Image (cartoon, rainbow, N blue to C red; front, side):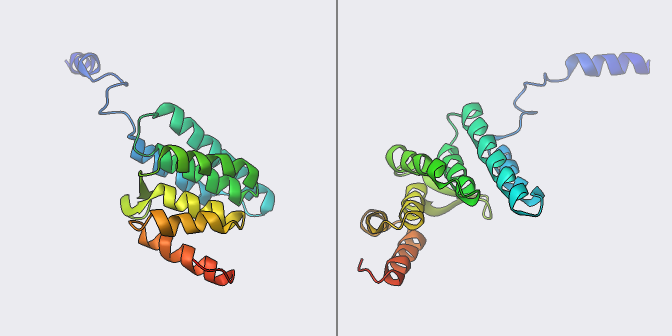
Length: 165
């Protein structure tokens, strides 16, 4: 009798592709991010982990092209390339966010949701900060008043550089 019950449960169980068994885009996005904790100590290990995480976020974009987290995944790609000191690889990802996702909400890993800021505001911030180009920081102040933390940080950096808003 137990074999029949087992056979019935196997035959009537949802397929592996059923959405109830699929990993959500949010879970996958966060899983990729937290890999940095597994990075081996030392510069070489850290760089390779950062590149792997960037590559995993590229796969995320391919797997979930319609996700609300695509802009955030692009931001993470830029951030992890920068952490691996591959800033030239980071730049196109930041520019893509600025051009293609100007009003997308930034996803906070800590809050597990939007933190009220815009992803493009942070892409502008990092674009300006990493390449020391004030014009990008000024664009945040001008166009992203709905991202108060990015605006505040842009003002602080400009002040630190001895520049006006």
